[in-house]
Length: 354
Image 1 (cartoon, rainbow, N blue to C red):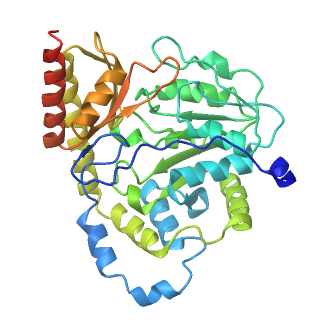
Image 2 (cartoon, rainbow, N blue to C red):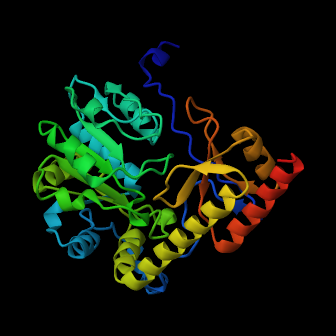
């Protein structure tokens, strides 16, 4: 079977488990526990299904315009795709074509190394320090491009914008991408730097703070030339990436800012409450500014906690990886879901007499 010698063989990304059962508390994939705005529901209700026989706008014009208006940039500064994964993957394909290695943290979104392997891009992963913080000096060396998640996943840590700008300013000859999937839950976005640095691409998503993971909407904002290059590659790969319902729903979501802000606030308040209550039973955390906690217990191994919670139909994320194999990543659910989580955790702790 000589054909196997020519297969592009990669180790795929492993997403969080998506159980078939509905009778669970699902805290393992950082989805928003609240539904999208009623404006989204109404927009989809009003959708003329006869229009679905037509191809959607290849430029996703309505969504691009709505995002440009929302962020006070030009339409030529906006690129959209099928979730931020699609946007980042397209950006890897577009901008990371040097023989020099690209750089991203050793503990970060595990899809980065998958894309690099898929596109045969050399890469290095500078180690975060003992507190899971970036060492900005590690990004001063020669490279073929940089991508940094901020806040980071799975650590939930936010890097101050001054540190992000320092890295960008030391790398003006390559494209620097800031992956801001969780930025709405805390911290300042690097969007304010886009007009200052022509090599900066900021990537965000509807999957977390806008409660629309199922619609698959992601976007990037950068200078016009970067966006032109991205669109050229996209149109050489698949012109019709965004489906019509997603475009319509994406526009509607932006029109209900009060609901968006109230939902984000609810998640943040629940996050802070649960941190305090988990600390009382022996848990330790990074300083989360995301919609999840990165937690370990002083006495109980993370794998044991993961398995015992799973037996109670509470799903959290466990990473069997170096440096983080004693941590759980716990998405913030509703108050009721988090109360049930706390109840089961207390039972586990008490059972061990801790």
